[in-house]
Length: 85
Image 1 (cartoon, rainbow, N blue to C red):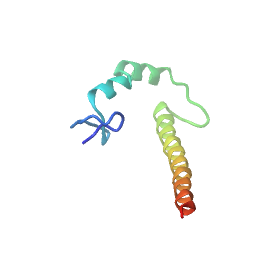
Image 2 (image 1 turned 90 degrees about the vertical axis):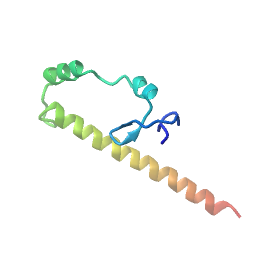
Image 3 (image 1 turned 180 degrees about the horizontal axis):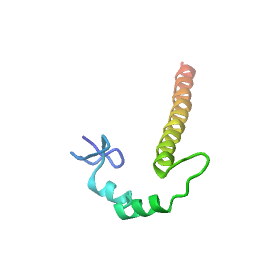
Image 4 (image 1 turned 135 degrees about the horizontal axis):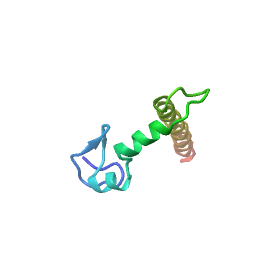
């Protein structure tokens, strides 16, 4: 399989997404210590009762934004195909 980012051959997946070691390193993922520190320092709000709730909601927002952009681009492709001829 190919890395989603650089198309290098890889057998490694992170969260079901193929990614090579070099690209994974380049993501600069948070260490467990950093995550625990952020969790301890997190201040609850009216919208989120915990750090976990906020992170889960941010993933939903990200996925929704991705889908909106994908629909727009697919629409452009569809319209361009209709203009050929």
